[in-house]
Amino acid sequence: MLVGGFGIYIGARVATDRPSGYSHAIVTALFGAIAWGIISFFVGWIPILGALLALVAWVGVINWRYSGGWGTAILIGLVAWFAAAIVLYVLALLDIVAAGALGVPGV
Image (cartoon, rainbow, N blue to C red; front, side):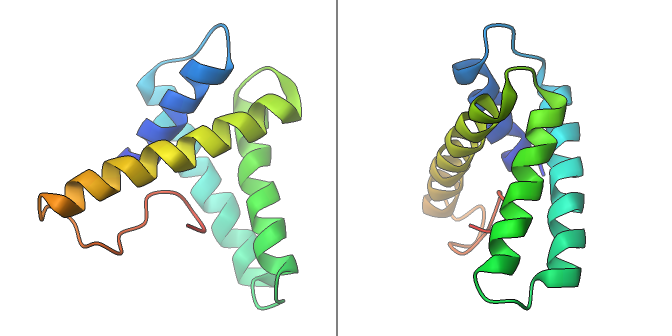
């Protein structure tokens, strides 16, 4: 949650003119994970469509929590994924987390 929240925080700093704090990003990551989990539970078994709907739900939570519309939410999500991947790579190099650790849903 902390890595995913950090990714969303960085994404919001990049994509919005008035980014919120880190705690706002952590709550967004929590709500996003809950939305991802609920959608995955009900339709995750459908190839491609299930994962796509879960991703749309996750971006939808970002859209709900940050101003700027769907385009901004998608950009925040992309930057969040990239930032979380970098953090997890560095933590894996330092043997702090397993190399397969996931910080952003669906990665």
